[in-house]
View 1 (spheres, chains in turn red, blue):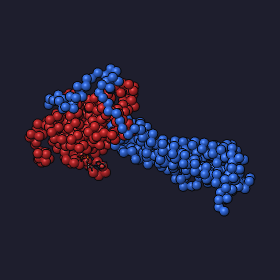
View 2 (tube, helix red, strand yellow):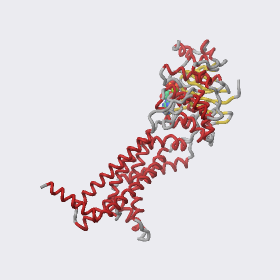
View 3 (cartoon, chains in turn blue, green):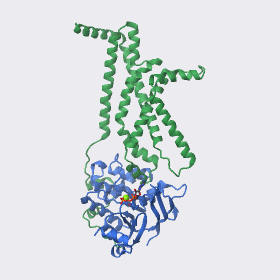
View 4 (cartoon, chains in turn brown, yellow):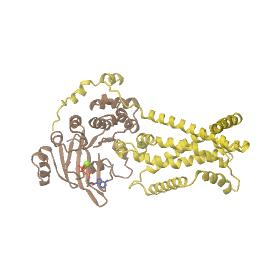
Length: 244
Length: 280
Ligand SMILES: Nc1ncnc2c1ncn2[C@@H]1O[C@H](COP(=O)(O)OP(=O)(O)OP(=O)(O)O)[C@@H](O)[C@H]1O
Ligand SMILES: [Mg+2]
């Protein structure tokens, strides 16, 4: 186990009277690949959005290298640059080419100069196999290509953790593989990852840790061999049985 | 015979033009300068108002910031409603005579251009504010989240991602405002601005050629608006850029990016799904 990067403590989140996350506790260390599984509406997306402050937690703490990210005066943009996020719907910038998508964050947020940013962008575009399409605009490429571009856009910022929110759910089946492949390679490079997924084979084979969420609480967590091989909770069993 | 009337009209027009051609051209020039300047300034005002309107008020902002933002947003609303809800011809009169009235004639508009540009600009700005608001709204919020997620601030997100797309989306409205301004600046004659239309008043007053000079005006305005519609549509097409892209071959980009020397096998590795296995 590497050093602690993220600690979530007693995190709760309500939308009005709807308590979506209840007293969530978990940690994430360097090199961990944590898969978050659970049925629709269990709060997985909300948890990721709280972690990178797209959503304001209602109570509890989130510590990044020991620092409370909800503290007054905390620099959210700088923090978000270190926590990459990949969305189900890609969210690429439609007014830019794939390459420009991968450059703009580096020049505006990290203040890298254009040449350095471009060289770095090319490095990651190559990693995700998107060099051939780097001059295309998002509207001109397939879903799988968009998602690989979105992954590169997050990686160029040199994040310490990558959050993935069902990165393959919006894809046609034949494109799921190419995106999972990129994620597998990322994991094997040692990237710390937090992956919300319905791809059980990915959770089982790639992750170091699986978290099962149900109705806003973490119902069970453990190494994949245990969660998939010998789940302790009835709810986990019944959830996983749907995938057999 | 109707034909002879047309011949007569043509001769009248030629006569008027030989006598007042320069004045007409000068009027057209003034009309174009006024409507162009006011449309540009109006767009700037519109974008500022639209951007202010889009500033999010967050729960955990300090109280003074929330109050200040709300006040500014209300002021913008009042401005928009006021200038969209009253005729421009009256706004011109209102401002032109209002300033000396309230300052006991100590301050007056010494230059008719200043007043005209001011009135048409803030009028256009009020309309543009609404368009820009809609334009910003039309950019899907996912892109804003994508930008925030890589660490861009709200302001950077606006400048780099949202506004360029909003601007493209509202190009038709900007063009429309410009066309409207070419025509509607004619009401500025009320405070003595010498635009294209004011030449009509002057000429027909002097030599009583009401219909022939009105014909000149009609045709003149129509040519101007058609011409600029065409130009604007051309500009829109150019903004869209190419509808295709070139596939980039691997060797090409390697040649471009100096110190970058990953081998191409790396990419193939992933594509073939032969990446090294991660050990638990
Ligand atoms: N902005 C919001 N306002 C109100 N309720 C919300 C909001 N976002 C999410 N919720 C509610 O929170 C609950 C959890 O949603 P969330 O998207 O986190 O679930 P999820 O586990 O990601 O589900 P899925 O697998 O379908 O993506 C849902 O009941 C949803 O209706
Ligand atoms: Mg979700």
